[in-house]
Image 1 (cartoon, rainbow, N blue to C red):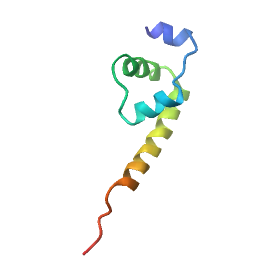
Image 2: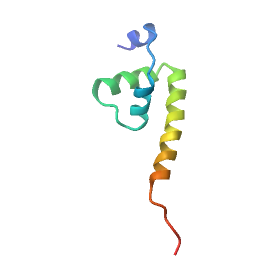
Image 3: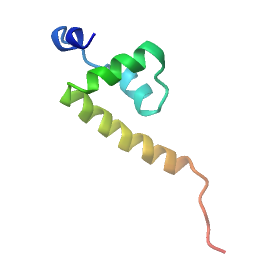
Length: 68
């Protein structure tokens, strides 16, 4: 399958990147994305950017801890 990922020009789309960064990719999609990220620098950069955004959104949504 890795040879197919190298030769077919496939890249992760926005929905796949979002699911991957949020930890919601499963099964064949997760396997395909993991494998693709081993060889694709542009997709790895997109995942890194999405990860930063997801972390920021999770922090913003977390209950604030006020000091007494």
